Length: 91
Image (tube, rainbow, N blue to C red; front, side):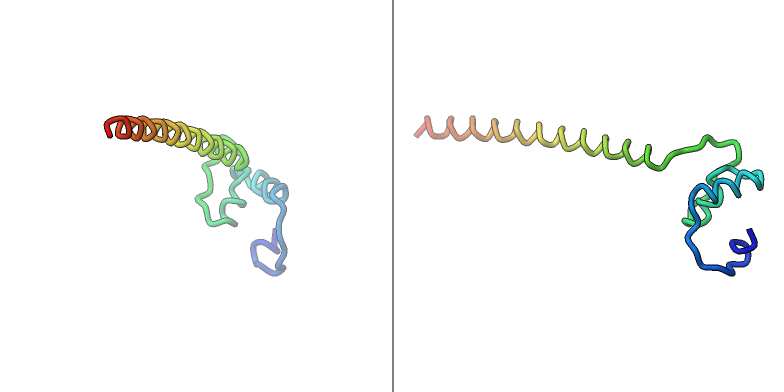
C-alpha cells in the first residue's frame, strides 16, 4: 500500500491487486483502477461492471449498424438499377 501511496516503486499493478486493496479499504472494488486510469471512482454501492462486457455490447451495436447500412446500400443499388432500366427503356 505504501508503494502506491507514496509512489516509491514504478510497477504495473494487476487489477486483482487493486480490487483487493479497494475492497480492504471499504471502497468499491473498481475504485483504485478507476483512479489509476483517470476515471471517476464508482460509489461503494454501485454494481461491479466488467469493461469487457461493455466492449462486447458496443461491438454488437456496431455490427447491427453495419448490417443496417449494408441493407440500405443494397436497397439503394436496386433502386438505381430500376431507374437506369426505366431511362434506357424510354430511349
